[in-house]
Image (cartoon, rainbow over all chains, first blue to last red):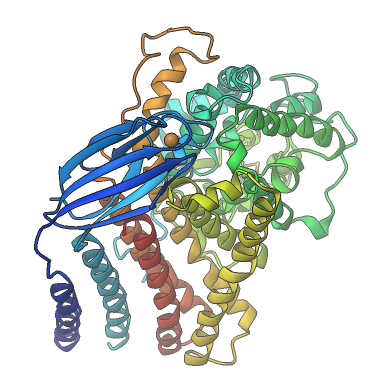
Length: 148
Length: 468
Ligand code: SF4
Ligand SMILES: [Cu+2]
């Protein structure tokens, strides 16, 4: 029982090391990103920035009126053909945030989605770490119960 | 020692909800479930009308689309199935016309049913047909969830199909085996529910030779779902129609509260049809996510049938993924489990039994997926209840309520929390199934490891897909 607890703790600590390494961040930068909106997707579909970056997104539409709303940051803009939109924010929250079209632009409008990824994604590393911990924990638990 | 779900609640713990006097009185009344069906039917009338007059306009401002694919679907996955089993089937208005026709009336009992009353062929008494029916329906998800008229056509075909088929085949064969796309997963996922309908005292049933619940009497119909109310076993095929509460002369039926997922441990009537149902449901959750909440435009164009080739590519990939790829990967882990555990156990038995671990995993994946629809899109509902037919009405003053996503910033935490809970639950069920399947405990432990690895990998994949 004591041994298996020790193993569990050791494994979890070992697992945490890559997270700490991956969590090293780069210097914050000024980033200007152009996103093309077209029924029913954004190009690029994923925008990757680092924590602390000052991000400006220029939204261009080539067909109809589209919008862009970013989950978590709660900022938005919109664009029509020939009339670009723009928004600026400082990427302080890390993780994946969904960018959604905020102007009804056709049947697939609610599915018009892009991703903003602000690295390092502690949330993702943390949850993978938890899942692996649950896996190891469950194995240790059933092994331990086996011995009377 | 009785086993405990999550080490907390004994598997056989029950609280009888129908022991509360008023509950039993209501359940025994013939107004139940007639009244909720009629109320539900009025909502569906609005849905159908909105679907028809809404034509091909954008779905997010259509009452039919919003109520079927947001309100109904989310209620089903997040509330009804996990908490109340097949309660939807109790109140479902779609087969009501067919059933009223069989009974030639609304509330009176008529044990000689109208119609041809044909038996359903034995070879088809399983989930295979509805597996393909549901998979087939998801080919059209791009239209169903975005074009009101597509939802209208789907619902009308179910209603008309049920009237015709219920005139041919006896009782609820239509719901059970033939025509309901969602019936299969409602049945399988209801194994997770924290409620059940069961007989109270098996001895009373044993002594009661004239099984009124099976053959019917003047108080109620013979079980329309053609199960044995005195031996239900699992929730799968109990449509909660409540007839057995009315027929039983000893008041021996009960609605119980119970720990979740206990039906998955019932080592009886397990089958590959249900295994594939579990695979398909998991695969569809992944594909739906990619189409509705993913960032790949080309996939949306495929599902939206922008080009015929694209659409066919989607249909083929979606089918291969669900019918072959997921089962194939799962098979590898089952094979490893047998190799580690005990090579004498038939592979098919292991494969079937362990596939039930995908039921908690799948339902939880659907709940996590549903957060991604609920938080961003539920504000549309306020719009459509005020102007259901897009005729410029403003019934509740919310017709101009703007699209307002809520809690989307913290949504990933809801999803991760749910998925991790699902992992814990499916691991718990997984080990219990492992103990059932392998006779010796050390074999069960070794055989469990690959399955646990599979479940963990699926969870990590889903966390990454949904939030990372
Ligand atoms: S009628 Fe009641 S007592 Fe008789 S078999 Fe059915 S549930 Fe049991
Ligand atoms: Cu758009």
